[in-house]
Image (tube, rainbow, N blue to C red; front, side, top):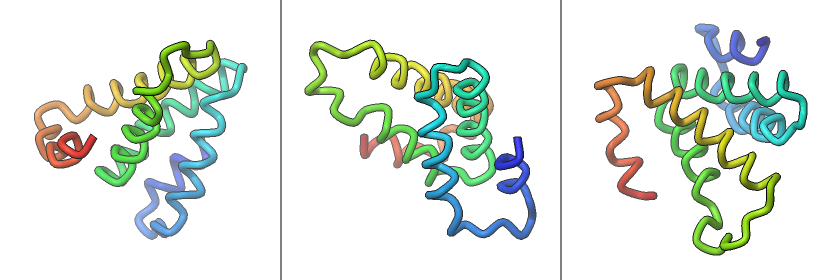
Length: 108
């Protein structure tokens, strides 16, 4: 995906992170499996390339309003499952380096 290659470029402008995150977070809600699967892959690639800042954003999006959603709607459940998949991919790839994100998980 083009956004993934932009992030991996050596001269990547970190000011673009919020815009790229918004694109992926919007695409994760898409009904088209091609779109949301690429968004999941893109989010986990951002974690690989950027690190804690992106992991924090994904984690916050995953847990937002979780305590108030007793009767969760199908589209919200899908969004959370897809965000969870992005987190799982990132965690799996991080392996033992995940301990570097420990402060992040303390704040959630």
